[in-house]
Length: 580
Image 1 (cartoon, helix red, strand yellow):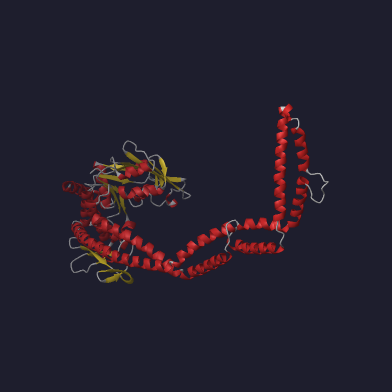
Image 2 (spheres, rainbow, N blue to C red):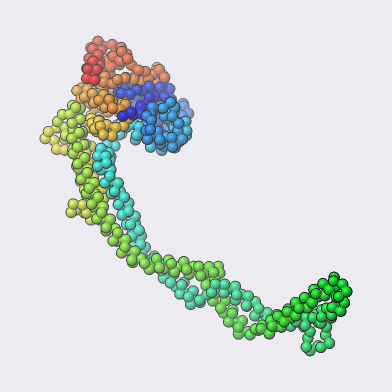
């Protein structure tokens, strides 16, 4: 299996590092140096490259910003490559270039494959590329949620499959519970809303408005209000067109047009143009007759009854009362009534909905209990295998009598789900609380690792866990910061040996102060300060041959030129090579 490899990091203006290049390689690389030399900045730099929190306090005093650049060789088809390309990144001769800039003011920028990307994209790639372990990460292992996640990761599909089914049922149950709770807790509000809707619908039904009725009544009221003037005008117009019976000698338009038509008809045979004009005058006569007839009918039909006007105004007042409450016009009022009737149907159906949701909730709780039991069974089976594997690893880390086990327990909760005849609390990951226990020696009761493990023992437990993970779910690169804290002697040798074995299937970078660990490394880097207290480009160098012996001697006795320390350093190197 081809994994990615962190090839190089360039660090500028970060902490004590002015400008340095860290050249890495496959296998086991140890980073050493005196206390305060800046070794931990290697871990910090990698954390920044992988989307870690940007702390402006890390920027070197006097610098505007700190910059970390990394180069990771990527195998073809890796999912991390696919995600990077989705973000617009491009590979550089098969390698992914990552850059992170942190300003002294706190601003942070990230670049991936030549493209500016959100820092979150780098964090997405982190899980697939590098496992970083420092003192804070060890503390993270003490959290129960992290221990459960570790067990689930080890179990693989055996837990992932039932967990996915459980998660789907859990989300549906939560949605049903939220909707049910909303309906029940808002019952009073919804009842008040229903009463208001019924009142409005009853009021509208009592008036029985018709679409467009308000417009029709407005026009009728206008006519009735001016009936006398309209009748007088229509009568006068009719007399002008057709004559007034009370004035037989009067001249009207119809008589004049008829006379003009007769005059032209007498001579129309002599000129077609005049004949055409005669026809047009004839048409005018017909039109005048029609208009006069309509005027007569309008005057006869016009209702000047004040009782009718009163009825119209009363009806308009009733419609106006509706438009003040429910819409700008009657069309809007009718639309409100239709929508409110639908809403009232929904509100009146709450009892049925409550019954329906309650049934679904109860069924989901039963289903969730069954899925939770399957999840618990899978975790218990995986826990036995995981604990046995970690215990075996601890035997190789100078803890031969230590025993690791898992306690998988549930908490009673009357509002929970039924599992194995008990009603227990549940959450998005199941009903289980998973806790890693350690019995450091025979006769010692298993205790939570937070209470039962010293700093050195916790480091070894963490390393053992990662070694076990490497066999089932390998990570391309492991970076350990002070994993050997609180450890010495034979235990340190065993840690070095296990790190070397882990490096057979992955890239391992270890920041260490123990020569027994550094001796097992395939490559050793020395971080050293200049006289002004900074680390420059020449301050991170690969140690080979005599230089490596001198550094191991310093780590052993604090004296590079001690013959005893040199002999011990050479012995460590020889033993490590023989073990490989």
